[in-house]
Length: 335
Ligand SMILES: NC(=O)c1ccc[n+]([C@@H]2O[C@H](COP(=O)([O-])OP(=O)(O)OC[C@H]3O[C@@H](n4cnc5c(N)ncnc54)[C@H](OP(=O)(O)O)[C@@H]3O)[C@@H](O)[C@H]2O)c1
Image (tube, rainbow, N blue to C red; front, top):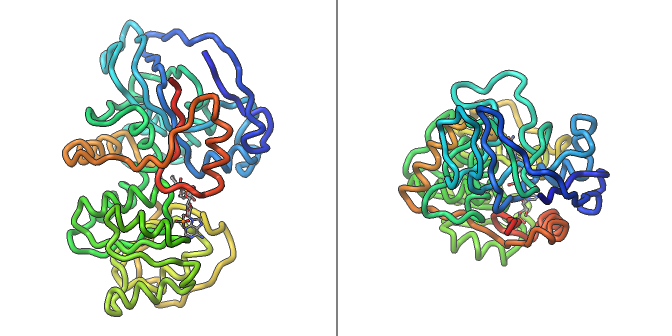
């Protein structure tokens, strides 16, 4: 089987393609022929060495993938050959509260999905919603579950509430799509007018170009008649958090997810801002994944796939993704 491994932490050029033996399942294991994988911001950080010594060279990158079961161990009961499945991000988090000391997941401390076959325990998979292709399903495990958890895990979103999303990356586009499912109003920020058009086409009620309008928080205040947003899906981090607090009210829920605009520095916020409710949101458990898939299946929601690259074009896919020209998900087909 084909398998990309990180030889050097120098971005796409540091990947090496290997030919390896396909795995054979133990009694409770499942082998999946991966038909597609997808990229997340974290994958670019890992391949560029921004996770430091926590990631060992030689690892297969990427956390997200989708495919079909080709072999199962003698005691496996949760699936059979031919089933369409996705491996879950945190292989050991099935349900309940986030375990302490959760590890880095597939493509982090465990070999990931940029290869033809993956072997996982039978508990570490979930079925693909019937209406989705492998390319679409490969978009779900990290970004979609994170967006879902950001909107519903701590404080469920209500119809009519105003949600702010930041940028047009994977998490933010899923947050926009899910917020519309819940009947919420969405104000999205982005860096370009071209991307703004795409956001409107996907259902954003208002879009603010944060390059043309750096004080996008004031625009959110105007758009909410001085009230502020009810939920903010915070993927910017240090560079956006101060402004998120400035367009929050006392009950606003701020899901702290990412650091696209930096991990430190940024502007501060005043004492009263602390009245907003912040909580960390990230990739949830298998239960969260399956809760989300019920909504995706019922509403026939389709992930926004920006572009599909071939397996031999994995390096080009990574370069396209890290240039941040995409809207939604960048996918690699393994066919
Ligand atoms: N904690 C977790 O478990 C978890 C899970 C998933 C993701 N995350 C984090 O969430 C963030 C988003 O991940 P992703 O995979 O969705 O990223 P992504 O697809 O790489 O997002 C890229 C997009 O973000 C937007 N962006 C870049 N700089 C920005 C800024 N200063 N302000 C606002 N938007 C900006 C740009 O869109 P525009 O050009 O439209 O602005 C860019 O195209 C990352 O920091 C990631 O590490 C965390």
